[in-house]
Length: 311
Image 1 (cartoon, rainbow, N blue to C red):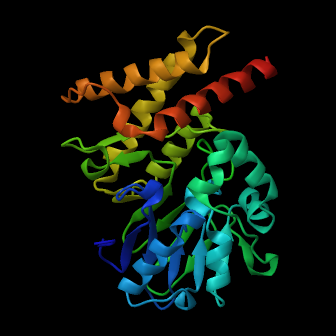
Image 2: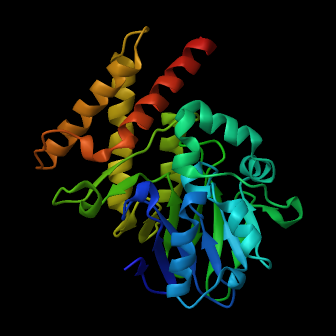
């Protein structure tokens, strides 16, 4: 089953990123107007279209495409999806919109991180017609019918990140802001685990804590994670995200000025294993978290290097 029904007209489509289930999802809100939140990468287009078909929808039925941020596992397929969705308009953070209209810098930045594997992992980026892009202002709203969505600019994971609050479900579509929810189907563990994501190049722990505080003040019932699924009550996701940032802040204070990526990755592995042990879970390693440990460690290194340049 590639579609999960969360009620009130909200559905998650498993995008099978990394060729794995329960890794990434897009969300569909069915109302008088149909909205898609995040598209996944260009490589996930087939899974996304199949999920829409399972809901009795085609890409031509989409009225709105909403991008939480332009990291490629969330928005790499936006150009392809907009070409297949002739009546849709695309909503994005002001800092994100320009990269969707002209993805050349986005492509260059992704290749700096992923190298020759970029095309194999994410596929080819296509531009979006600027006349079909709408800037999502902070606290701007979009009414779909029974659902009214409110956009919140939420830096911390990325400067161009936004979250979307849905008044009907009292849920937040969190992108990468309120942590990653690792399901047993993905890790092979017999429990669900949550930790914040600190991938390059805009990770800022203080900004992340501020954004978490702002979102929590909305008193949401649910968090709809891109990675993966729903956390209810929402407080559980805020707790594991905030705790993880505190762990990382403490780590940063203890690291030497000449820290290497390898040192950060080793320290991050120990932090996660300790966090799991505190929760009553003993695991031999955090290898099942896959590429995230690498990306998170790299994001922390980039953050440290930026601070050193400003010092």
